[in-house]
Length: 158
Image (cartoon, rainbow, N blue to C red; front, top):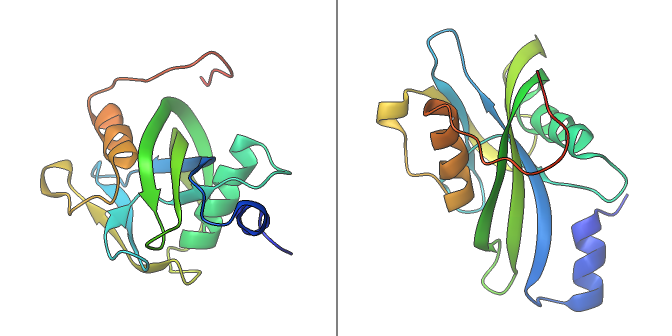
């Protein structure tokens, strides 16, 4: 099945577009955050990704986390919407990405790389984070650790 982004790119080529994404701040019992090393730019980010047209934000989040980490998660809280004004996948493939960020807990599965988008999965202390791949991801991580939210109107969690 062809992804939404593949369909859009067929229509508009490499034009600058807007996309929606979802990601999860998942921490272990030591409050260390789970990050994935991306295979495209070799930088670190939160588990998550672009949403498909036929799914809700929550469904997209759960699907992406499962695809990338093999973990089943449950949403605990909504951290906010964070914006990356210029996400690049290839030299000419760029978009403004609006990322819906959540705090989630593991409820099943065993941590392992499940797809080709990641080369490593690792938990990090906030004080020892590696280079994060995008501003929206860093803002979501900061929001979690500083107990701040970037709320928009909409669904509220516990």
